[in-house]
Length: 536
Image (cartoon, rainbow, N blue to C red; front, top):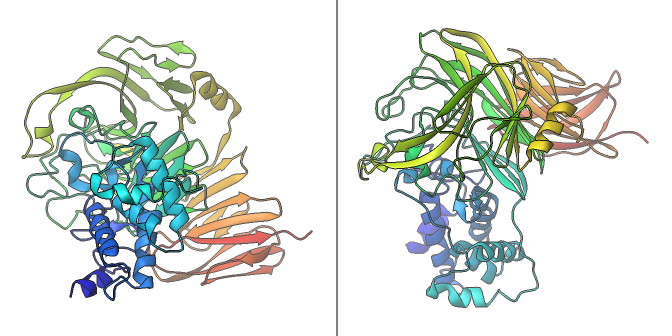
């Protein structure tokens, strides 16, 4: 009975559990890779180890699915041995985190025969390098692999988890994640009094981590302004606990939420209909190597409350850390605030910001006070404080047709940020109700969000979709998805003759009148990557 139960769980599920993209759902369509999914991986790993070599062991197919969940799902959500808060659900209200030791799932996958054993060993070594402590019960598992001639390694590149409206972008010096929601997923939950302030947890929440503990240690979560989460566009008003996500249905629904990606880059987009507000907006993100370009348009909110797009809200490791704007250092006193309507760029504590269009940028530096009790009825109301810098774009009251455009540059110095802004490395190719598009000139990459059929540059589409292409030595790598998750057939056309040399099932191509027409028979919001070559 136990074996049959584990076999049933170690496969892709239509409901809760492992999803097709190797994210994890619990309590309905709610992303929980770092919560219930973490407990799941520990339990399965124990079962695999206990039953190895017996008739009760997990069959090959189940072991393969579990390995893919751990290596293509869970590990991608962990930076410097801390889970991304966006995959932990209401567990982020339980207090400060500590860095994990090597997960049992990696230790077991490093010690049992499977096609990805070497990858698991490399990852286990990276975890141990960050936190060398381990449980005595797993000492033998670690001893068996620590001297293996396999170097430590970590995931790098880009992934979008279409089943969960969740995106990850990883570089050696930083980790970024994007949390969205659609009519297919749950934005947040309130259970046992946990999750009182998660109103905007999926409204385009863009975390940028330079260190794994940036937001999950030192009471940072307890002292954040939960009405100004990074990346979100919000109506600035106080909400009741769990307002908008305590009981279904939402006041409005949107299906257009999704993303595309090559191995290293990608684009994501969200047609936002706020759960507890009449606010609607079109939001997109373009992830290049060390820059994230953020566009918004069609921001509408027929209320007298101000609408804001939060560029970042970040605790300061040094309360007096210099904020440099267009080459001038702003005051470091607390509290401080300023409107910077003509700002071109800004920098503070290792992150640069480039403002790509004229917009009303607000900044403030202050000591913020809060408590864990404001997030969870199970926690205490003891006051905690941290210094924060917050940057946001003010769209005003009765917002109509508002927009924004900026780039976040993690790991940059002030000088590098200034150089980036002066060089215009990112080019906005479209920014209206029909399409959002950005070209990265240095890397010869272009991402396009077609909110409706149309053309941008050399790319056109006959239905709403997302496309991203990278130039190669002999052609293009093209990634496309249908964010509405409809079973649809549509066409993306490249305005030059190319030969389709590699494509997944459901994708075909032909040259018509000197243009390459790629046909997609898309399902479930999946990411379809094709390689196209130019004639020599």
